[in-house]
Length: 243
Image 1 (cartoon, rainbow, N blue to C red):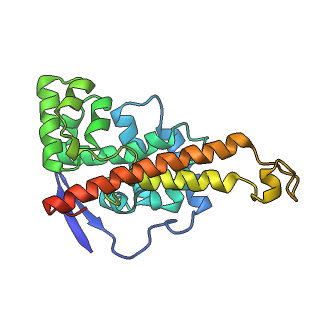
Image 2 (tube, rainbow, N blue to C red):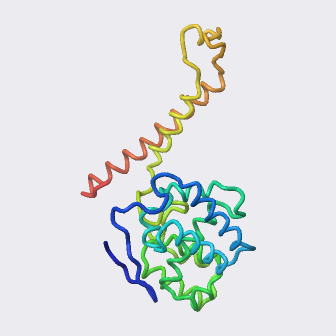
Image 3 (cartoon, rainbow, N blue to C red):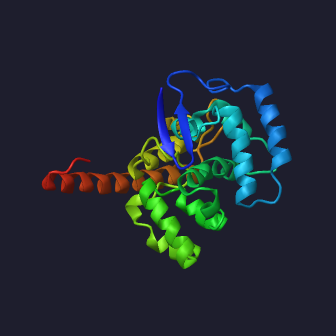
């Protein structure tokens, strides 16, 4: 078991022990949390989202932000909760409702309330806690707009929105393109000599020329992304960098 110290709070991280409903979605637990979220969520705003996030943190992540950062969206009951349409909050906002708690831990409630919600959402994606605090202080002192704050954040400090704050890096473009190619190919009926002549398959389906063209276009995108990735690797090898 490990601990991390943040402003005004010490968090304990579970180590190896599954959280409630983590491995398999707990329908009763999800129903209970959904009802609590409905009662808490009203018209948005930082404090409202923090209250919603606290409900989910306490119920699904043992009250610990570090547990959320470590487990994130892989928590089965969180995914089930985010998929519900009766709680009045989108899946993205539900994630932010929890993620925003780290900003408060780093800044304290007083300073956190001086920053608009839109700016808070941007700060959540800054990797380094010290850099995030510095940017938050500047946001307060200079009353930065969203665009002004965005200009202050170094690109390397930004976590891809929608991804867990800690976890796997963003998928390479070539891998994404290949997955899309696999998806398109999987949608095609079995291709035979008869089907390529426009004759019916055994299952009565015909090859759609547009579908085949779509696959061909996806192949081109994948090859282009693969070439770009190989070029990056080659440059890194020349410079002695690792990919």
